Length: 106
Image 1: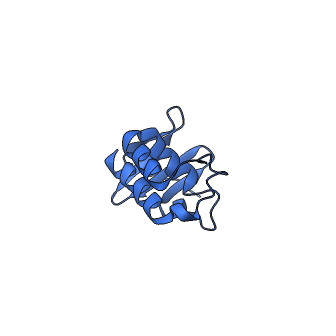
Image 2 (image 1 turned 90 degrees about the horizontal axis):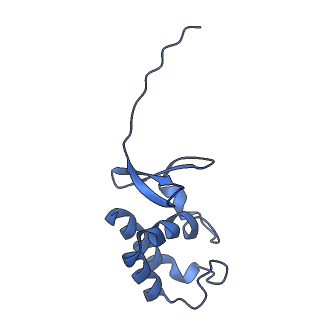
């Protein structure tokens, strides 16, 4: 949880000026308020990562962390840990990498 919050906070600290606050539904917020909200509410930090890092900017910053993204399936890697989005809670849950070996004959 802390790693996800830290990524969101770091993104806001470094890219807040690039955001279109009205388009992002943050009209009336300043940088400090958004950072404090990330610190307080885990779901908000996850929203920053899934929405602000990937939408409405010239660059998709989320793509630097994406390991897998297909439809509603999203896995990101932060440092050496993997996180999968849980669309019921709209938050990231820590995930384990599992390897499956498949044998087939041609």
